[in-house]
Every structure is written in structure tokens, then in C-alpha cells.
Image (cartoon, rainbow, N blue to C red; front, side, top):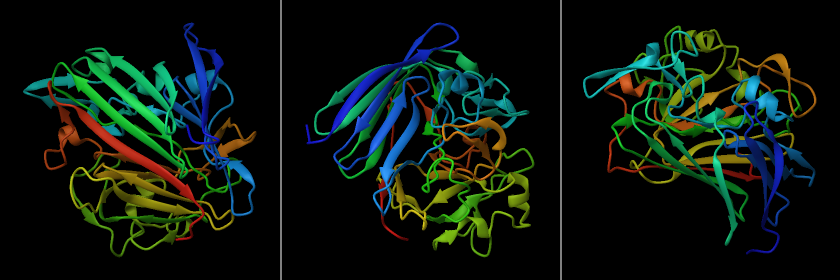
Length: 358
């Protein structure tokens, strides 16, 4: 075990239906600390120093388990079976129509009413070369309308280089669809510090997927050039977020999938970089996925009190959800999210933190 690396466990609370939930604290030698609960596999805190050595939590969340159960917004959780939206809450697979729970009318969003974010996962912790938390969940056939018994294993690792690595794996006994991601809201200036509009962001994408009025992709891969979606050079988020561009109006800001520029389908490659000039903190997102959803916290509306002690308002955090494209089961030109018996779904994402200006 590297010096300073550790993982500890404590009771976090009990769900409304009586299931015990634990919190795991992963630390490394650089004063970086990550807290994760096995309810929803939720990252509740990421604490790390800024350019002056001041430590702050850089993700949004709640202080109480009951808030994660009831107040929504998907802070820090694992998303499944299917991240993002599926049009009209249905899809056809091998000639059979599957109807899903409608929780974002008229669509299915982030796995449904009781998605992976609402499940208590079986947890196993270990520290070898780095602290790791393994989470397992068996999603039964028919859960939220999805076919097949899906066995999911996820591993969070905290690296010595201040990276949070997430390795996803899943197998099924029937043909199904899978699209897993993490829904952490980041604010590199610190939770509760204000908006992310002064953050600089770079997204490695020449195209994005425009959406219709209910935020379902139209099927087009539109060029980012000449639009507020062009982040091929690092740009201030606030510069485009109040644009009159029709897609910004539809999403109330950024809530769009970016088509990543990739060398191949399996390599771990840079999707996006984020930098906060006030703190000097940076984050680089590496992934094996073909897309990333940039969501600028548009639906945070001041109705909930977060772990920073104040209410969360529009733009107080942003998500960079690595993923296959939204509504892929209904979009034959998009990369497939189908998983068959005998196959193994694998995906890796790394959120790498540092003090590197863009």
C-alpha cells in the first residue's frame, strides 16, 4: 500500500425501506479525499487542495441519505441501465417492443423511476496499489421495463496522481441495452462557491447531437464550428450559455451530447478539460466512450439545500457524463448500446484532477 493511501468505512444511514447504507472514504498521499456511499454508488464529496493549498469539496451533493432518496437531481450517482433519455420511453429490440417507466415525460430518463441511482449496491473495499471500492448490483429481468438479468460490477479507484478511475462491467442473460455513467456535478472553485460560468472548458469534439423540444436527439451530427458548442479551444462557459442559439434555448443552457473525436472504439482518450482560474484547479476527463454529455446545471432551481449549506441554483455545478449517445436504441445510425448474452460490457472513465491551466 502506498504511503498515505487508505480506505475507511462508516455507517451513513438507513433507507426508507430499512436497508443499511455505508460511506467509504478513499484517500491518497496528496491530501485528496473521496467519499462514496453504496446507495446509488454516489460520490458525496471530492476534497482536494487549490493552488494555494486550500482544500475544498469540488462536487455538489447532500448531507443526508434521505435527501438523496427523495430530492432528485442525481447528484454524484451511478446511472443505469440507460444514461440519458430514451424517446417515448420505449424501444424495439429483436422485433419486440419494450415499454419503460416514464419519468421525464414523454421519455425515460437515467434508468427510470427506480434506476441504479436508487439501489443499494453490494460493496467491497480494498487497498493494494491504490484504494478501491467495488460495487455490485444484479438488475432483475423487467426492472423498469428492461429485458434480461443484468449483472453489473463497478470499481472506483483513487490513484496516486489524483485521478478517480471508474471501471464498469456488465453481463446479461438476454439481449438488452446498457449505457452506464456517473452524474457528478463539478464546481472546481468549491461546492457552494457560486456558478461555473467563469470556468474554462475544452471538449474534444467536432460535432454534437442537436435535440428536439423534449431533448431527444434529432439524429443529426451537427458541426460545432460557428456555434456556442465549439469548445475545441478552451472557452469560458458563461460566454455561450445565454446565447439565442435555438439549441441553447431548448436546453435552457448546455444539455447536449458531444460526439468525441476518437482514434478507435476502445482506447482511453481525452474527452474534455475543465479549469477554474480562481482556484487553479483543473480536471481532465478520459474515457473509452464515444460521447460526453455536457450539462450546465440548468434545472437547479434553488429548491434544495446542498452540502455546502446553501441552496443550489442554475449553473452552480456542471456534469460531464461519459456515455453512448442518448436514445441510441431508437437511432440506428448511432453507436449501438445492445448487449447480448456471452458478451461483456466494459467502459472506463477517469476524472483526473490537477493544477494545470488550459
